[in-house]
Image 1 (cartoon, rainbow, N blue to C red):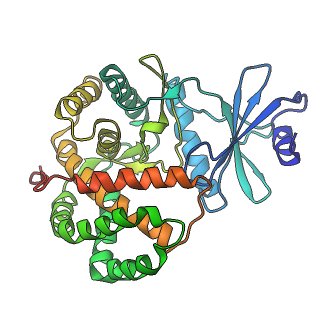
Image 2 (cartoon, rainbow, N blue to C red; image 1 turned 135 degrees about the horizontal axis):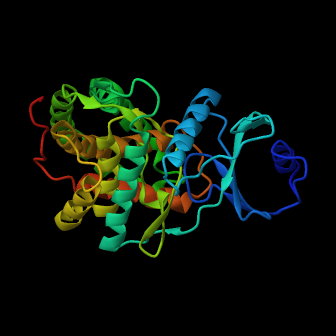
Length: 343
């Protein structure tokens, strides 16, 4: 067994057997986290080493408290962290944060996703939101969406000059390892010029709408919802969790699993609202989250690849992900729905 893994496991209990360890690397993700699957007498476990950059110990502790809160409320499909011998929910070792959870069964759905699975996914997210609604004060906070506020500030910086600097970085660097992305990268930059003004106006209106703020996942992707048959058996990867409106999670998952299919989108929203109805302002923010997320998500990938020079272990997975983001942006309907007036 790897010495680091042995040291981390020793923090949990003294009589830990020598489990079989399967290294999974980044497990197909892009966060920089690394994973191992462990066989133990209590069943398979998942060991995760967070990247050095994030999250902070304080944020990870908060995320774990939210997961425990939801688990106690009856949500059984979450990666609830195991507790160390000294009562901590993670281990600090080698300059990294490590966590140990039960291995959640199931697999992410391949496209096209069956309607039954889409309905189950949105009902699972609704159950998670309901379980977190009373987590810690201020439980009745109503304010503008912090995520949309940040997106608008990011968009304005791009309009004011960052997009020009991004173009300068992309031109000479597209001949490198990301050469296959050249046509899509150019398309993303052209789409920004076409859509930035509309998205700006949409976000200006959206920022005025008050919504309830509570813990939300903020990174719900197809790969993060696990199924056995049509049953959701896992929601995974909560590294982006923070206080936000539930509209952020609903909008993100709509993009990920329904695309522009009107019938699937209606099924998804109806399934979610069968457990947790959206109020008028939350519904009004769905379009703002979708359009701004589609535009800025593609721009973020260009920045990570051609400005920040981030390293990703799986080159092919990055190409697939960027291609998907570029296609979404190219297919962004014009004009799109803008949020209604504040209620």
